[in-house]
Length: 394
Image (cartoon, rainbow, N blue to C red):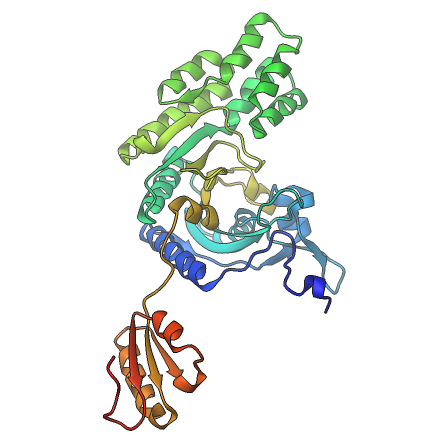
């Protein structure tokens, strides 16, 4: 083995050491329990999927996919997200009865990163999908569950930015005339390059009224008053329908009494191209990227032969931990230090204490080089040394 790679990892891959593992396990369990309480059932899908199905349906850029060949020459990918694999499973096995399916997952996904990007190429998502429900109530349920899950995890300082993919599309096509020009302008929103957006709009051959409409579009951020502002801006019927959906969504969120966590941002667009309606991103504290995102993707299941509505969201577990700040990953554990002649007695004591729910480490004292460092690691230490009945003080 080359010494150059002995301690290195592939670009974007990370080790999870014990303290962080325990912290992640705790937060993951809290999220999973809350999702189960809302009636979502957990599902697992393979780490490897076919490129021609899940790979192309995932909406992740092709250069971000990890690809490999199987023995028969088929191109496989490491799953780049969980929504597309679950759509595959739902379309093939779960939609026999025309009832909404509430599915959940906790899984690692893989997206190749550029060397200068500094982002993880493997990260864990915990999320849900509601497949088969086309109502705005389902969109509201996703938002309410996301809020409830984050609060249960201990996060209080966060906000959901809510937009609508159809509104942006319809407004831009209405003013610019075709999808190509609309995509060109939308690219500035993906990059959150609002200076570039303004300069681009000012250079377009538009009437002063339409130019002002596109510039005023950037102001559609804030509370529920944004809904009225958007209705004044759009003339297209489908665009108005999108805004009325946001009005209905606001009513749903108010019924859940979670309106304080919501801000509308109608400039919001997603790199996940399958979103077709209401969508949202979750921001918290000083974390520079969204810690979660979700939305409606009514067209995705058509790629697997089913025409049915769906909505969902995913939380990025690592970013959520960053938002939560320093958490204690040390789980209190006891240690029984024994000498060889009392091994059986030590094992019996450890078994009794483990049966009562304690975490107990069983350690032969002859295997410890630094006794002080060893005992300092544990919340409680018992010594079974020498002949029975002659233990030193604990």
